[in-house]
Amino acid sequence: MNAKVKDVMTGEVVAVRRDASYKEMAAWLRQYRVSAFPVIDDNRRVIGVVSEADLLAKEALAGDHAGIPAAITGILHHKEYKKAEGVTAGDLMTHPAVTVRPEDTVEHAARLMYTLQVKRLPVVDAGGYLVGIVSRADLLTVFDRTDEQIHAEIVNDIILRDFLVDPALFTVTVADGVVTLKGAPETADLGHRLVTRIRHVQGVVAVCDELTCPPPERSVAGLYF
Image (cartoon, rainbow, N blue to C red):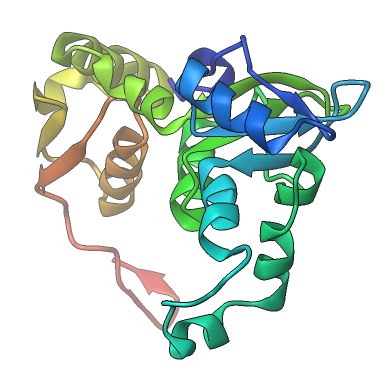
C-alpha cells in the first residue's frame, strides 16, 4: 500500500492573502505555531509561500548591513535584499509555489521536501486551489504502522496476491520496521523485484536481503542453458 498525500495532509490550512502585512504574519506564526503560510488569491488559488525564513530575512537583511562580513553580503543575491524590503505577503513570498496534489505519493512529497529543504508543502487540486498542507511530521506518520501490519501486507498482498508465489517459500520477519527476507526465489530477477517492492511498503524502514538466488541464465551462440 503506497500512502498518498491525502492520507496524511492537514485539511485545515492557515493561509494569507497577498496583501497580508508583515506584522499580521509574524503574529499568526506564533499563534498557530506553523512555519509557513500559503499565499492565495481571491479564488483560493495558491500563488506563493511565505515562510518564517522569509520573515527573518527582513529582520536580518533590511536596512543597515553593518556587522555583516563583506564576503557574506557579496554572496547574497540582490533579490534577497529586495525581498527583505517588502512589507506584505506578496512582497516576501517565494513564487511560484512548489505544491503537491492529494493523489501524489508520500514518497514524492518527501523527496521534494528533502531536495528543496522546505518544511511544508501546500496541497492543491487540479485547478490549483488550496485543499490542504503537508508537513515533514505528517509524512513521518507512515511509519506508525505496526510490524504485524507490515508483515501481513508483505506476505498476503505482495508475495501471494501480486507475485503469485507460495509464501511458504520465504521467511519474512519484521522488527521495528526493518524487514528481513529469506528464501530461495525461482530466479534472481524475481528476488530483485520482490525486494524492490517491499522497500516501498508503507512503514518499512529498511530491507535486509538474505535471499539465496540462483545465478542468472547464460547464453552461448543463442542457446540457453
